[in-house]
Image (cartoon, rainbow, N blue to C red; front, top):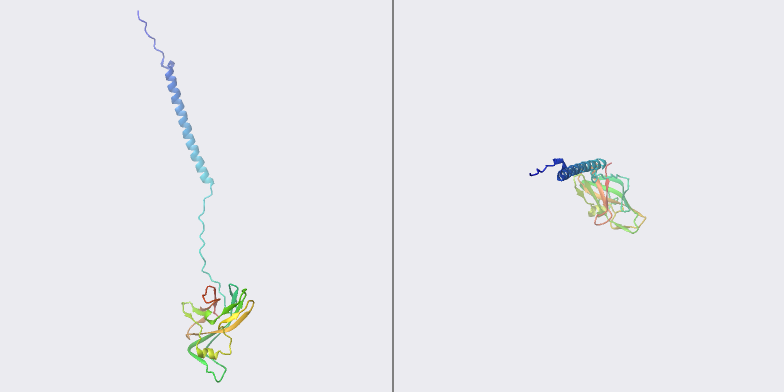
Length: 207
């Protein structure tokens, strides 16, 4: 008589338990991974919130402001000061000499008395050509070196290749011939310390 093989309940089979353990382990591991990812995301978000937002650097635009120096006020550049002491407008320059003809113009002469002080450690050479008169429209006037003007101004000090030693100053007059309608209130005197004009000052002639 053949014996019938008794089937074990499925929960008593070893491979069923092994499979269950694997499934449970995978589920638990996935949960931890998801939690780790979530926690990592929260940490990144918290770090971003805690990190102060970098503000863009404020661009400092170069200023075009020019300090206006006027008549009677020294303008200093590279240890050399320029001062316009006085300004005169005239149509005729008197020579003060009956044998020398007066200088006249159809426009007008602008006569500036200027003092240059040298605070450098070496001698400074000044010439009348180192000065110019400029308008707001960009018109530039050079000093007048006409023979009649030079003769009429003979008794006045000028800046023809004058050497100024350290600690000393030189005062002289510079003459410009301009149009009669030129408004000097809108003009400036530009002075420089040398031939190349790398060091210069601007003095307002506004009165």
